[in-house]
Image (cartoon, rainbow, N blue to C red; front, side, top):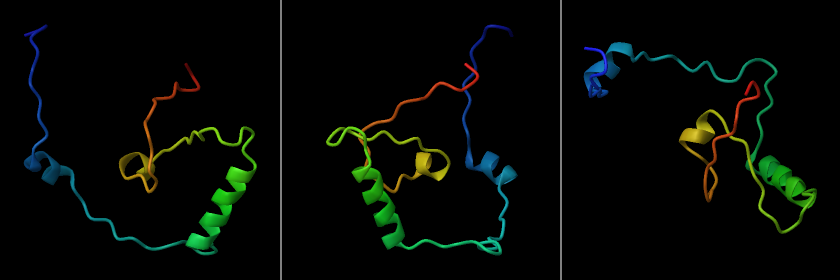
Length: 84
């Protein structure tokens, strides 16, 4: 019936229909793995080069950062797409 709202729910049975296990082949040939020290150095360079020292730094995040952030954050904001 048009106009009649439906209640939808995602159940474990639904998830079981689409779940598949994919083996992780690890990094590809020539991949460079970074250490925590490498990341710490990069963060320090970003902080030192910030155009407005002392002000907040906004990060654009995608992928796993959206679902499981590795950093503490104070909020989130949906950005407009480049196409409008």
